[in-house]
Image (tube, rainbow, N blue to C red; front, side, top):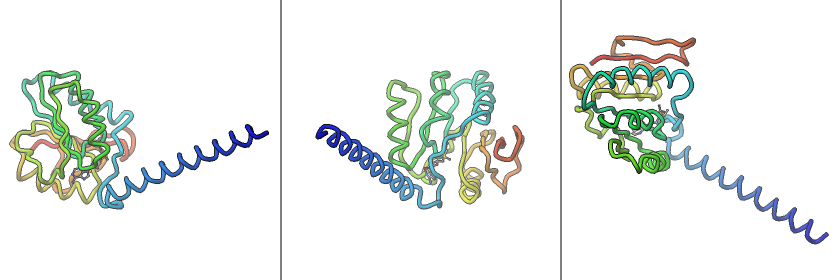
Length: 188
Ligand SMILES: C[S@@+](CC[C@H](N)C(=O)[O-])C[C@H]1O[C@@H](n2cnc3c(N)ncnc32)[C@H](O)[C@@H]1O
């Protein structure tokens, strides 16, 4: 009986610990993402991710020494598979969240063609980028559009998942069903 009681208390303790850890992680993300002022580290996923990556892979396989950037790289979801497939190109992820950036660095530790910078992408030099990924909320997309227009070189391709840059006309809009499954390609 004593053992049963002990096990029940132990289970209750573990349950409380898990709930507390989950609570702390949620609070961390809320603070880190500025309470909806900046997007949470939700990764590109599903068919939109697959199609966008296939699109970029076609370009990378035809070119040499490309620089691919992801501004707000989250967990490294887009750059890591590309960097693995294209060791001849350079990949730079910029992420201000401590945890997603740290996990990305950890996942990239055995690769030498990819770097994750923990910084605000508004302070990042994007002038050497050939391809840029963006998956940010509307307000940020409009703000980053001004930076892209003034700092990228001619011909830079920008892939924007779901949220367009309203001030720039896309070269292509790829819709895979609804506006949630849409990405926009810009040629600067
Ligand atoms: C929706 S996630 C996209 C992740 C990744 N690009 C993808 O498509 O899988 C947006 C990321 O942008 C990051 N972010 C937002 N504002 C930022 C800023 N000013 N500087 C750096 N990262 C930023 C957030 O922390 C978040 O991880």
